[in-house]
Length: 331
Image (cartoon, rainbow, N blue to C red; front, side, top):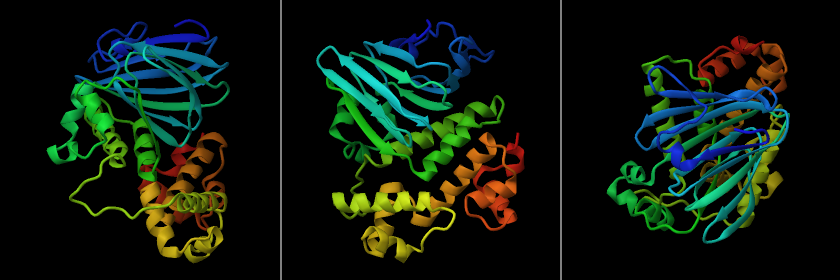
């Protein structure tokens, strides 16, 4: 890697060569540290099984850094970034795709045949990123026959090796997905259980990511949300997040955004994968975790900050959600 611009090859990423990475004794993990003049932090790669690789990064950069990626045999990629936004510029031999923003709070599923991409990572901002790299031939093993016929035609073309155009799909992160990401980023297991734990979490992330792409004929279809309904549901989410210390009741929230209570409840579950107040509960706990990790608040201060009246009930909810006591995060 050179200063300012770093180069990875997607073909090598799904193969063998990891130039500059330090390999663990069991060949399961490979690690790379950012040079001090660029930033601090690391990138880790986990070889889960043939054709399935996990990349995890946690770093803080001193300046904007561009990472150049490319290859003739690209993988199918599912990417997550917490909590920042990344800009991608993509070129293809057959077409050019303008720059697009990979937003915080969302995941991206993409496949770019015969491609070259440049990702720009912002400076002075903690970045946590997770990337799942899947060889297209492995994708079909994740679906039953009837599901395979229900996935988007673009994904079927990738599996069958006849996709010549770029495929990109952005997904809003659900609270359940955020929980899995936190569990992966804070894995405390050691080998050999570590491999089993990480692979199970990666498979969970894959299933959550594909959930919105599959229309299972054996399950009841979701009701249709119109664009204005979607805007009202997102406005309700924004109101919950903004007023999490003292949120409105469900009926009041529905009135505030101009939608009936039942449609808000059902629509919220369809868009965000959980109920209105489950989303609020998980958001409060995740915000509290950030406060404990970055602002050195006491447990009581963090609890009050996110709307809990009693620190004991907050501590119980926190441990149930994250599997650890909030006191353990105070630095």
